[in-house]
Image (cartoon, rainbow, N blue to C red; front, side, top):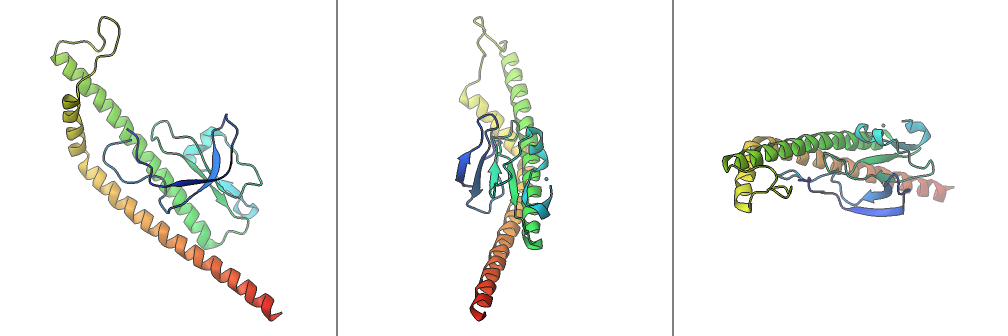
Length: 209
C-alpha cells in the first residue's frame, strides 16, 4: 500500500516530455514528501540549477537550464512517493542551502523507509495468503487460472498483525517525521525573513540614493 502524500502540489509550469513524466511545480506546504501513517501505501550551486536526490538520479532526467522551480517526478516503484529535484538559486545563501540539503536528506530518508516498508508488507501479505489457502487445501489459482483471494475478514487479521508488529517502527517514524517537518518549517520561515530583509534593504538603499 502506498504512503499517503502529505505535501499538496501546485503546478507552476508546463509538464516535461511524456517520456520523463516529470513536471515542474512547488510544494505549498512544508511537508517534505509524505505524511505519517500506519500501513504502507545532487551539482554546482554557484552556477545555479537543480540538484537531484540520490534515488532519482537513475532516471537520468535533467531539468532545463532555464528552470527556476523544483521538479516533481513519477511515483517511485517501491515507495510510491514522488521524487523531487530541488532548484538551486544562482546566489544561494548558506541558510537556503541548509534548508535545501535538509529537504533532500529527508526525501532520501522517507523514500528508503516507505520502500522497505512496502516491500515487507507485500512479502508478508503473500506469505499470509499462501498459508491460509494451504490450510484450506486450496491452490493459489483455481481451475480457470484465476488467482484465489481471501475475504475481507481474513485479510483484516493480517492487517491487524502487521500493524501490531510494526507499531514501534511506525511510532519512531512518526516522531522523526514531525521533528524533521518542524525544522524544515522553521528554516523556511528564516529563509522568508532573510529574503524580506534583503528586499527591504535594497529598497532602502535605493531611496537613500
